[in-house]
Length: 221
Image 1 (cartoon, rainbow, N blue to C red):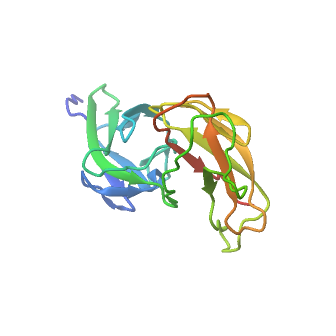
Image 2 (tube, rainbow, N blue to C red):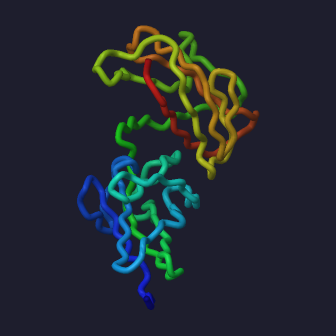
């Protein structure tokens, strides 16, 4: 059998064809399908580039029971400007005869459960500054977070804080210093679940500029 045809690659989102330029809510809803009429195709590699920090990462992936593939979930910053901050996903495939192919698709990305915070302004000092009435100057307000059953998440929760790779300085949250490009795990006390506040300040005196970060709760207890 003489096979000179590379595998065909297609992208789907929520079980429908994904077209370039669309918006994606959660990478777990993307699937990559391969088709080769003569031999069995295999996905070799997935690359994701772009976004607000111009990231470039190689994604892991899992094969589904129907033979399609789903990307592993990286920590991605949401698209801030849909005209400039889109991500490009590239799939590389091969078949049993060594024929290779690649295909790319571009999309705006938002986490499935996205909470947007207002920009925080503070001074470049390594402590939690307070106003005259003892109110912290720069805080993160968690708002009401709910479990899968709809009940309020309360008490101590595990959170992952990621500082964007192009941030201009490290931040300090509850004594944990997170540098640009780093992800660290912290424990947050949500109390009774009613809008907890967490002070945030620069990790180095004299810091200036902007530092973007995201907070993720792997599981709410």
